[in-house]
Each structure stands twice: as structure tokens, then as C-alpha cells.
Image (cartoon, rainbow over all chains, first blue to last red; front, top):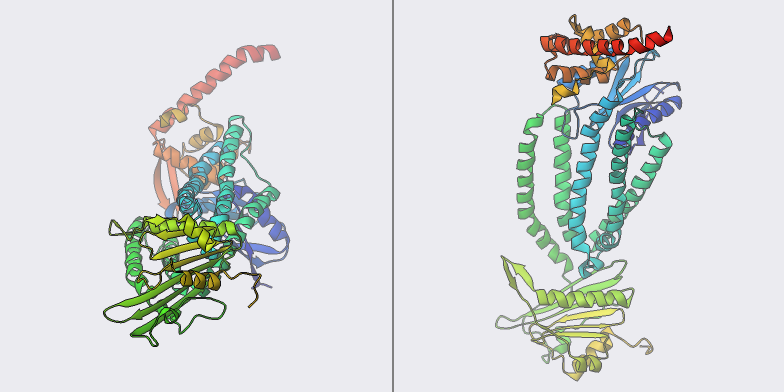
Length: 461
Length: 106
């Protein structure tokens, strides 16, 4: 019994610190005494169920990068101890005490005005800073995902980001609204000689459910999306996770060392700057090699069944290839584009090379197919940015006569006629023929492409 | 500006300064205030800690010694002046009120 411990999800808003004491009292009555409180998890130890009085106070010093024990915090805790409150643990600015001797000690804060000022200078300021940082980040990300980018529709994480990220932003506005509401009410109460805002445990729990419940569901969906995407694009996913992963480990280590007084708070900034530079250099050096190593994963002898492609062999008049052949195939799925793949057929002959690149997209709805079609054409027009220059820009032409001939909903060609983008219903096809092995005006080529990629569903094979 | 905040002392502020007419440590102040007011005014440890920090910043009190994380403070001349000003103010309030209120009671 003595050694029995359990961990419980915490998740209280810091401004609900008065409700935390009520919760800890409830737990003690059930036979659980709090030992340690973390941001999301609190650790409890089994005790004989009894009534214990707790007090959660806000100390002027604290925060993520402040040691647990400082000269002033120790002095303050000693004063509380002498007045009958035994210190248990701390979480940033919050200090957890209990009455060990049933002596009914004087509450730690007896001046509401002073208390309100401390809370505004610590909890409110920290929370608002956090909300502000998130808001800046949110605006930046929202600009990157809205209007909808077709490349985001091709990955689970992309789809989640496009359609659930705005929802996540709305939910994260809850704390901001609550902080503002709390501050206005607290100021008004103090001005009118009333006591500071004291939320009930019930309302604090409601906020936890409303905020974290929704946020965790979205985070879980993000994690699942990453796992699914990792199956199809291991290199890219590793590359994306490399920075945040190393950053999180580095940040947690720094925080731990500061909390345990292993490094001084003053030198934290130096460590962060040096650490960030090292991480960025590492990603810059390791990133390309990670991506390069994953290239081999996509090398194939032929495309799998059910994934139509056009090969160089079938277009060639020669009986056997003249040079070295290389084939690459990669596929992926997403909730909006359940089938999409890339096929590259390449023949290296020394003096001349031949190549066909095919990108096929099958969406759940023609609306998304049109987004993909427009996205590809815009991407070609924009070209690529490289060392401050824009390269590989293409002029796109639309040929209505050709569109009718091909019987497509949308058709676009590059001016050089080396790339063709066509869309019919929920299917989009992008053929890149930069070595000109095909003539898109040729009837045979047209019929080959249509019959292979846009088969008439009424005609059975 | 900061001095303005102490133009009118609150009850706990007044009694804390009064308690520091003799050198005292934090818990000693709490006990002394409770003794002087016969339990009417009670000061929490957190409130006291913050007020002591502010008084020290304003040089109303000064730290005399520190032993085992227990700091002992006493009033400075500035602190005595603040206390005296408040005393005079309170006396004036009582005097102004008594002319009318005590007369009416009688």
C-alpha cells in the first residue's frame, strides 16, 4: 500500500489553481496523496483516505526555465512551512502545500489585491505570451495551407493540416478567451472589494474536457497520419520529424538541467543558441543523405498490377533497349486521394536519353481532381526557386479543340508540348515527356493514354 | 510613483511595519501582528513575503541578518516616517469622525 502510486492526467488551466486544491482534497479523501505535478501528468501515492487541506499558491518566480529551488523560493517555502503549510511540489509558478497538522493555518494569501497582481504578472503574462506565439505560428501555417494546396491533399498529414488545423486554432483560442475573461473579472472583483475569481472544480473540469479533449483528438489524428504517411514516404517523414524530434529532446534536457540547478538560468540563452545552430547544421548535413538513401526504396522492375503506366519499351520501335534502364515507382494514399502514384521510366544511352514520367491521381470527388489539375498547372507556370532565381517556368496553353478531341473535363499543355495534364471526373493524369518520345497530337498516343488511364466503365475487359 | 502606492497603508501593511519596530523574522512578524491585534488581523505567509519584498525595495525596512533561510528585518527611518504619516492620517480620521459620531452616540 505504502509504495503504491498512480499517475493521473492533470491538464488544469493554470488560472484554475484554486480549483486544483479542491481536486487534491477530493483525491486525498479517496486515498491518494499528490507527490508530483507535471504539465499533463500528476503522480499520487496511496494513503489512508482522510481529509487534508491543500493550498495552491502562485509564487512570483517560476516558469519553464527557472530552477525548482532558488534562494527566494526556498525562503518563501520556509515561511509557509513555519505558518503551517508543508510544501509538496511546484509546477512553474504554482506551489503546492498541505496542512500536515490539522492546525487550520492562516491561508497563504490574505490580500486579494496583492494576489491578483502576482497572478497577472506571472500566470496571465505567461499564458498570453504562449497564446501570442501560437497565434503567430498559426497565422503563418494558415497562410501556407489556405487556399488549399494540391500537394497537401496527397498526404494524410496534409489533409489533416488543411481541414483540421483551422479547427485546432479555434480550440486554442479557448485559453485566450478564458485568460481575458478571468483578468477582467478579477480586476472588477478587486475594485468592488470582492474576492478574487474562484473557479469551481466542476467548471475547471469542463474547461479541461472542452479544450484538451478536442486538442488531443486532433493530435492523435496527426500522429496516426504521420504513421500512415511514414509507410509510403519514410524518408520525407524522417526528414520532417528530425528537427522537431531533436529540438524536443534538446529542449527537455535543457529544462531538466535548469530545474535541477545543473546549469544557471543566465546561461540558458547561450545553450539554446549554440544547440539550435548545431541542430540546424546537423539537419542540413544529414537531411540530403537521409533523402538520398530512401531513393533506392522506390526502384522497381515494373509497376504493380492495378497501377497502369506507359513504358518506354512499348513506345520504342527497337526490339531491345539501347542503354541502361531505370524504373521508379512510388505510391501513396490519402483520405481525399485514395490512389495516387508516380512512375518514372528512364533509359540512359550516353548520347541521348529517354524518359517518361507519369503522375496519376484518383480522388474521391471531381472537385478535388480539379484542385489537383489547377495546382499542377500553376506549379508549372511558377517554376522553381533556386538561389534567388526562378527556373523551369513553363507557359501553359489550353487547347479547346484538343480537349474535345480527348473528351476531357480539363486539359492543359506546356507550350513546348512536352507535358500534358488532363482531368476527367475524379482522375487527373500528368505526363512529363521532356525527352519527346510521344506526340500528344498523335491519335494512337491519345487512344493509348485514354484507354489505359480513363477506361470506359461500361466496357468490361 | 512607487512611494504613492503606500500613501494609504492597508491594515496588514500598517501592522507589519509596526511589528518591525523590533527586529523580526518573517514568522515572528506574523505572530506579533496576531498578538497585537488579538487575532483580528492575520497575515498569510505569501502575502507577508510579497509585502516584505516591496518594503525592502522601497527601503522602508532593511535586512539585518540571515540564518538558515530566515531573514531578520527592522524598520528604517523611511519606514518610521511612513508609519508616522499613516498614524497621523488615522488620528485625523478618528478625530474628524468622533466630533460627530461620538456626539450622536451620546
